[in-house]
Amino acid sequence: MSDTLDSEALLARAAELERKLADLEARAQSRLVAAELKAEAVRAGMIDLDGLKLADASTLVLGED
Image (cartoon, rainbow, N blue to C red; front, side):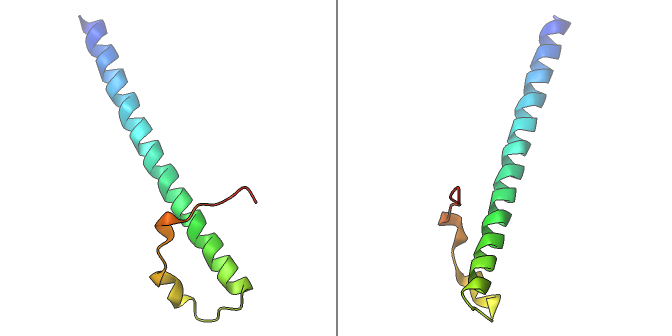
């Protein structure tokens, strides 16, 4: 019976770690999108980058290029 409890504990731990990993990946992707958006705004000649705060970057996705 202790094997079952150990297995359940390991499965619960694995599920928690997978959730944390997914959260970290989402946060990293969000930061990457924000950085790319800022870089493109600077390239386009935008001087006041405070306007980027108004953009909804949650719908943006990065392409391969």
